[in-house]
Amino acid sequence: MPGESTPLDRNLRTPLTRNIHGDAAVSLEAYRNNGGYLGLQRALDMVPENITALVQEAGLRGRGGAGFNTGLKWSFVPGNDQYSGPRYLICNADEMEPGAFKDRYLLERDPHLLIEGMLIAASAINASTAYIFIRGEYHLAAQRLSHALEEAHRAGLLGKRILGRDFSLQIHVHRSSGNYICGEETALLNALEGRRAIPRTKPPFPQVSGLWGKPTVVNNVETLCNLPCLLALGADWYRQLGREDDAGSKLFGVSGRVNNPGVWELPMGTPVREIIENHARGMQPGFRLRGFLPGGGSTDFLAPRHLDLPMDYDVIGKAGSRMGTGTLMILDDHTCPVGLVLNLQRFFARESCGWCTPCRDGLPWVVEILERIEAGRGEKQDLILLRQLARRMAPGTTFCALAPGAAEPLQSSLKLFLSDYLAHIVQRGCPYGHSARPQSEPACAH
Image 1 (cartoon, rainbow, N blue to C red):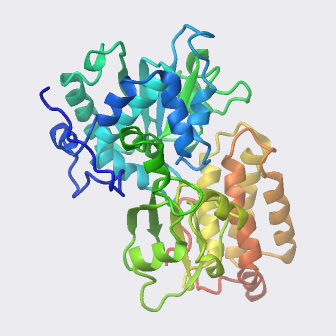
Image 2: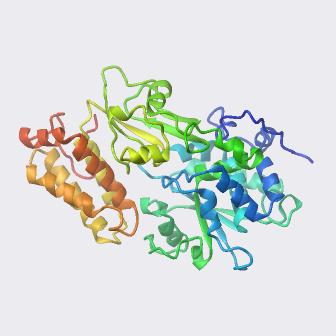
Image 3: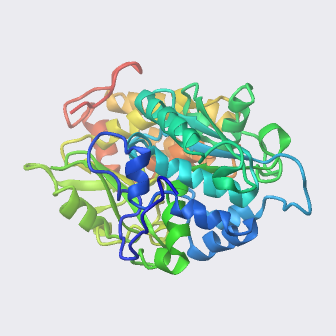
């Protein structure tokens, strides 16, 4: 048929970025010429339960940070024998985590990869309506997505009876209001319904009672972008892409004082050292690595002794942190760790929805203390108070993961960089020559 896709090569190692060769978005024609929509064709030949089983067998874990098995998540949606009403699929493209930029890379440059992934996911859970909940500031990505959706509609890949099958899907682009909390899946549901973006109590989980009380699956951009090639080439092919226990490839990024900051598609389990030294080309001349946040601003600091760890969900977890988004934030020896943590805490305090006390009141209190320490007015008792506040924002004490995520860089910095905190207190000022600024200005902008 016109526009038929070219078969994919089983030696393919970079399924997420195979179409990306510049800054422009890949057209529908180019996408199909490189194997696009073959995964959808295979999915439409399968019953929904078998698609879910295949994705579960492949070991695809959610790339939004939690790392939950994607197929297992889908399996919680009631089957047709249990429920006959509408179901919804939502793509969480509200990427606001400090240090994270991988989803933007996919959204802007290969929007058809996401659209095909959403078609596959929707067919697996029997959804006929889907939403892309995209960060409000991602103007170019939203524009390119809208154009790609029009292309797909014209080609019969969206709408009613897709590719002549008994499957229909409409995808709508929803621009986020711009709050970090909107990325939390239940706050996202409230925002889509036109309500205040606050987290919901679980259970019930969205797979059972989500958007407008109907079964709903929320998946991250990168998670959905893994599906087209996984369906086209199978679970065995997908599993062997990874180097360790976790399957597939992953977009890893590096920001900070390295020679070549950016994002690269690499096998799951690629060692941290290889990402920093081979792909980010090491530290800039005159700067030494002191630590890094392995998965964005809401993860625990790791030290240089962890450089040889593979970037694998379980390995990084056992080391005391989280792989999170897989985008590493580098701390160098010229940057004040107290100032860096202060910047992060200011962000999280500003973005708190205010729904629960440890987050609403605890985060501004942390900011106040850190500003005092950075300005040379801190006392040793402040460090005890910071540790107590971090414990009170731990998992299980709040409705969602915002405050626990904010506590991770705080509590780990108090362990790894305690001498820096003490130096601020003893020397009555920042040893890096900076002082805390009002919350509207960045601190320690070295």
